[in-house]
Image (cartoon, rainbow, N blue to C red):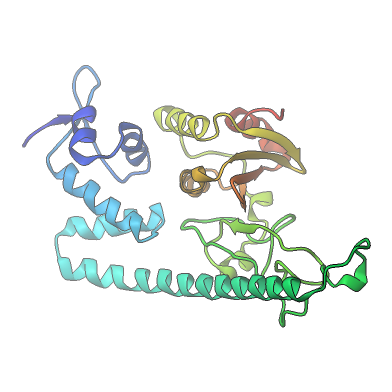
Length: 290
């Protein structure tokens, strides 16, 4: 069997070495060790990584991917198909809900814009009679909610909920919130789970150092500000996919962290909270406020 070092496997598979180490810590990938301590991988690791990558593109959580890899290793394609189908169906149902919410939000914005364009231009100061702040656009709009695979916190202080939309109750249009949540029903069941979760991390050694390095790279250059129970980091919006993936992975090992993503034009606002006992860990991972 061909043996590859981690750099060779990274080149063959297109998966960064940092991610390979993370997969090993998560139990998705195994490696032998040379007497000198170098990781060595067999040819089958390339196929395994291709399978993991395909599962990630379907939005499956790492825990689910681990279960699916176990079925895949057994070698029966029909078993993989049977295991995968309900998982995809569940993701599809969640995506359809989010699509409906986004469609409602888009409709509300269009209605607000049409209402605004129909109002006469006035030379005087704006007041409640203008109607700018209370357009009649029908039902309250719905803020967009994205369910990211993996356990996550439910609605809490600072998060938006369906029905609290962009033009509602005399408030101005709001940017879109992305709440890391496995779904609305699960979110209700696990609301504020992070507040009571034990302050402990299942990662250690290389896994912990690797995760810390990935976070520090992802939030490099962020502007930090204190929020109740944690801090808020402002980053370029193009980092949202990387941040969301890291946050989902983080809650696999450290469920006492609470993550909230807020998309605001060119900016991504990441709020991270932890119980009082986890304050030192939060600061160690995300830094001090500016």
